[in-house]
Image (cartoon, rainbow, N blue to C red; front, top):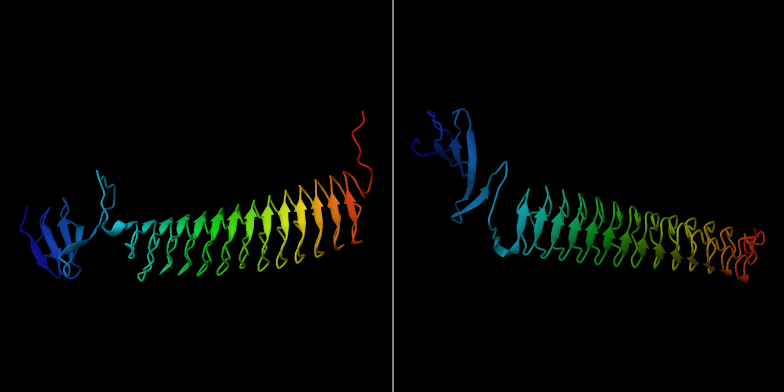
Length: 306
């Protein structure tokens, strides 16, 4: 092995396996076996008498791994703060990071986070715009992607709560659930549940497409496939059952419980329909109550005959 060299430029005469300290970049390098290139080994921190970085383009096998300050980073910049875990290119890599107890897994996950604490993400670009928001959970590509300062949100699924930036205390489970939301205190479980909601609150939607078209309507509950899926600005409605109130657009104060209950009602206010197909003959006439399967239906729906 040749003697160790040091300087701002590479030695003029080189040998295979020669060591050189690149004083410009503080990197210890070794000459390769073919003597035609330098391989970077360590980056030194001269100010603190330490190793600043180890470069490995391959597989690192470690029997045990100890990380100072409970902070770990794989692939990208090492995060500051304490008790942070970052796995993925540009994950948690804002240079001014001070928040603690964050976990970011995925490319650019929580990449802009500064003082936000106790957040958990898994997915490319999950919570990537978050700066100071705390106690958020985002699982899925682009989940809670626009969130900046809001707290206590949970998003599970591709683009769940995607547009939320300042709305707090929301729960979205399902692809595109609460996609456009910017409000607080909404719960959506199911693909595209409350997907168009912007400022409506508080809302509960459980089921695929439940309350899917709602934008600014407030205080509604929809449980079931396509329940209240056409309502846009309607307030204080309750629909329980598949296709319950599926045609309703803007009327408020309506309760429909049962399969297809009130499914043709569009703008009639203050209707109560309880039972399968109950009130499905009502379209625009309000202030009616019908209880029982087929009550006020377009045609009788009694027991099946043979």
